[in-house]
Image: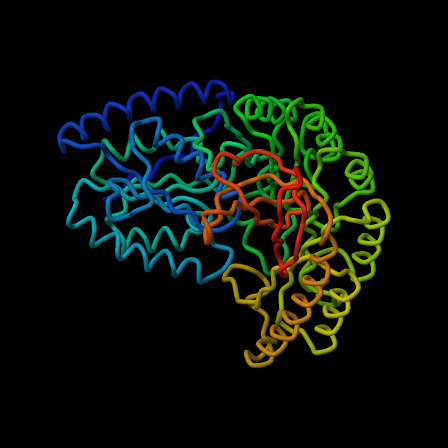
Length: 480
């Protein structure tokens, strides 16, 4: 038997809801302590994240709440007493990966009956997925979606109190509650949600159906959160939204994304501002001006192209043309000549001809991206593009993908090397994975740099001489 919770009309303010969830944290802490005493050891929790940076930020919130109720974080599922998958559903195979891993968790739970399993995120917003879980994965304890992650403490309590599957998936919401515990992956940098949802309905994309309509956070709340992060040691923030350029349109007192950036720039102690993702149709000249004048906004812009063919872009419902995209790039480069531009490109969209593909190759050559994420189109059930009959043959798509990748990589290597021999400011992020005598840092334009150092340098800015470009990263030496 399953318990499906009702999506009751939301009447509490964000502050009231935050206080209410804090009470559930205290309650869950008692349950965890009692189970820990019964087992004679601490309880461990493992969070696995699939998908985008917004999911990664959500997982930091989940981890923060799990830590607040008494779980110890672990990366090993086989030693965990609580396992949660924060799922992605942008591509069909992402769902299959989750189902495959759930089978393994089911066998683990037979050996550890007290073990709890939770699923959340975009995949859970699909009704057919929840039905399959109810039928074939009855051992799952808790299912919730993208709109009510702030209710995790409450849902966790219900799951601990019940021997039945708890399901709480909302179709949509206007409610935003952010002030709950967060376990940040990095001490010195953090993601910050500025908006949720998407109104674009690109014909290949499931996101608007699982993330809901656009809703923006109040600018005062965003600024306050960043001020608190800076006070806690953060020097770089990544502003997150499905389309940050449309931020603020639905607020009671509308504000543009560019205006929000100007307010964030005023925060003392904050050194770097990043953001993603930008939709080309909404990127304003006002934003370009603000970026050009800023001393904190990083000279990097992720500007998804998806296709260079105006005909295909229309079929994708992207609402810009090849010509308008190139004109936008020209305006950006006029004000920010040294900016690093990155992109997303889909190969093999239904109906794509060789001529359409060559238009994409033409844009890649004219723009000169520092890097590009290239994808082979795959059907996504529930999207208009999946119903199209003129799917491109697999062997044709593979050939085009290989040709595109070769061009992207050649241009990216050439673009990346333009800073060789200069001294650049680098934020140290970690000890190098391959060589413990090196540290790895990132320039403002998002390029990686490896250079001699140790863990004490993590989170600090260093002036680094870029000795040699290795294609997509640099080897350097401290210039100080």
